[in-house]
Image 1 (cartoon, rainbow, N blue to C red):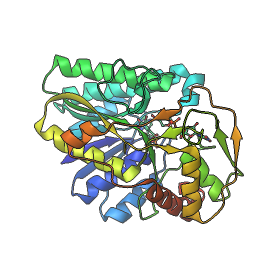
Image 2: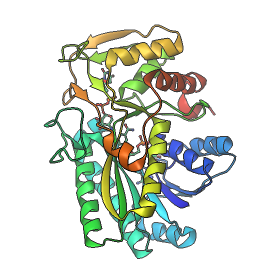
Image 3: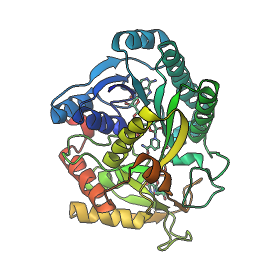
Amino acid sequence: MRVLVTGGAGYIGSHTILTLLERGDDVIVVDNFANSSPVALDRVAGIAGRSPRLHRMDVSDETALDAVFAAEKPEAVIHFAGLKAVGESVAEPLRYYSENLGTTFALLSTMQRHDVRTLVFSSSATVYGDHQNAPYREDGGLLEASNPYGQTKVMLERVLTDVAQADPRWRIALLRYFNPIGAHESGLIGEDPRGVPNNLAPYVAQVAVGRLPEVGVFGDDYATADGTGERDYIHVVDLAEGHVAALEHLRTHEGIRAWNLGTGRATSVLELIAAFENASGRPIPHRVLPRREGDLAQAWADTTRAEQELGWRARRGVAEMAEDAWRWQSGNPQGYDTE
Ligand code: NAD
Ligand code: WQD
């Protein structure tokens, strides 16, 4: 299949294009490297033995996008491009709404003009908000989010639903990711956040490698087994394979549908730190801090729908996620800047 991937140089994008290249797909990447490095694409090409074609541009530039669609004639699109930092979105809501909505509007209009109506969209478990209890089900009720970043995902799910309703030729997968962590087993590609990481796993990995002094544990008085927050961490390669399963499903199904991509298992902050201690063979200094505002005690997926309808399930456990993340972090202590 000829697949156009926006944000294909990013963390999840790079792992997904590798999976696509390895199964023989023709891959076209559109990325402006706002939050990624071109080195990631070189590494992907090195592992796969084939390169994606790159168009370095902003997805919101509809004229440029038009030219890419005319030249490349993609059959399907995976849309990863967007801004994703929750705290930043609270500080700069206008930028988040304008970027995440603007890029998606430009993409959808261009797809429509070029008769390309197969789309896999990166949504997030954040759309379940805080009024439901884990495990989250796709049909669990009204979607909401507690920050502007999450709101853009709720809004875009609404927009895509209306678009699909208006024209039944659309085939759209809304993939609600839980907490993607880990890296490709080669240790050559992985998560490379700019500045101090916002998320637990990259933070822990940077403490393990000596880039940061200690992990702050945001609260140990939650109503969970060890008092720390529980999440559904999913290996990024399992997640990448979930995108392939969704693309395959869309070959034979019109309309729009949401699927959770998670493992269905919960891991606490202390358990994740312990997994990285095992993987790295190093003690990871950590200290309990107050709760982080807006955090939930527990979040994990009901994975039944993806298993039954996509024939997909996550296969890798937290130990493997930590081992693969550690191979990437220890081999590339400064991320892609090492080159
Ligand atoms: P990432 O920042 O690593 O990747 C995003 C990519 O998009 C980057 O390569 C960036 O340069 C590119 N990009 C951003 N704006 C662009 C623009 N206007 N034009 C062209 N390229 C642009 O993020 P990620 O973790 O790989 O996330 C991918 C998608 O998955 C995002 O939509 C994110 O919201 C969603 N998501 C991520 C997580 C997570 O925890 N990582 C969880 C749920 C959902
Ligand atoms: C995990 C757990 C923290 C950092 C976020 C977004 C969500 C999604 C994924 C895109 C929590 C604790 C964290 C630290 C800690 N992104 N923690 N010390 O909050 O589940 O989800 O990323 O869609 O929208 O909200 O992930 O990795 O930030 O936190 O103790 O330094 O680790 O309290 O329990 P979260 P996270």
